[in-house]
Amino acid sequence: MQPGDAYGEGRLVMTRELSKDYLDQLVADVHALAADDPNVWGAPASYIPELAHIDPAQFAISVALEDGMILSAGDCDVPFSIQSISKVFTLSIALGRVGDTLWRRVGREPSGNPFDSVMKLEQEKGKPRNPFINAGAIVTTDALLSGHAPKEALSEIIHFVRAAAEDDDIHINKTVAASEKATGYRNLALAHYLRSYGNLDNEPDFTLGVYYHQCAIEMTTVQLARAGRFLASLNDVPKLIAPAKVRSLNALMMTCGQYDGSGEFAFRVGLPSKSGVGGGLLVIVPHRGSIAIWSPGLDSHGNSLMGTYAAERLSRDLGWGVF
Image 1 (cartoon, rainbow, N blue to C red):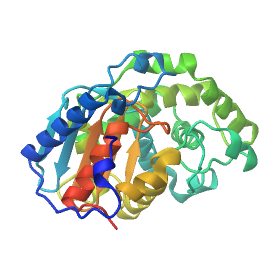
Image 2 (image 1 turned 180 degrees about the horizontal axis):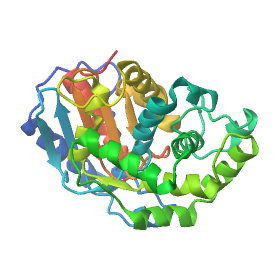
Image 3 (image 1 turned 30 degrees about the horizontal axis):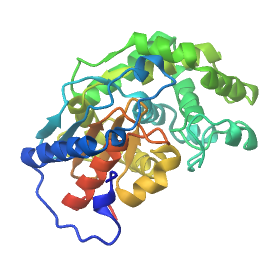
Image 4 (image 1 turned 90 degrees about the vertical axis):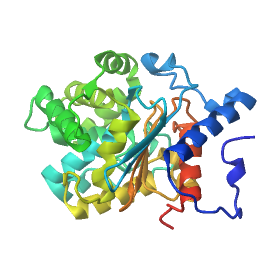
């Protein structure tokens, strides 16, 4: 049985109650699926050497609720590279700093192409389709870097993430950042292409240096779930950006957060989310909480295979989809 088979179209699903026991059972079910077919784990990102050797047979989930409680199960104390989930945080900072002028440089539409594709960038004269594909995220990072030294921009990013999680024990894995730089030929091409169209204000090496380090931020699912609460519009959590910006971010996460698998994820899960090729998944349940899932094996789009399965289980079992 493949992930998602038990949750096919038309199946009546009874709403259940979220509890530690429920999450423990979800983790057990994930491992039971993998025992029948190890391929359901997927494969780690092979093009980043430091991520390629990670054991795919790992799974963690944490849910941060509106009352401040955090429920977790699985490998929830293992830090992992958040990769493209960092784009949610950098976009939050950029919108707070430059506002809607950012949209002159990057669009808000799904790409329909792989996250590192140059095709649409060429067709649309250097304006990336959205801020969650690599080209769009590079533009966002470039906006943060303007007027700042790279170390200052990185400090601002890590400070924001720590403030969101209310946890100072969050750091950048410099070995992972160096590994990404060593093999980041497509990102280098994207940056130079953006520069050729006048859509990159800083030197490509400087912008990419910040970009690789932001992607190499490491967090546990507990930390990531806590960090995502500001996007769920909960009470008694840090108000890091304006409510209108929160709404905009959730809309973009729903339509563009899973690369060219965003439509399928919206169909199956029905919640705003952002994935990363480190196997992480941040899912927002508006006015209820924030979910962080980690399983390093990926599907063909670069999204966590078992993470997507677990998000679908949660959404359907608990009745949390927005549709």
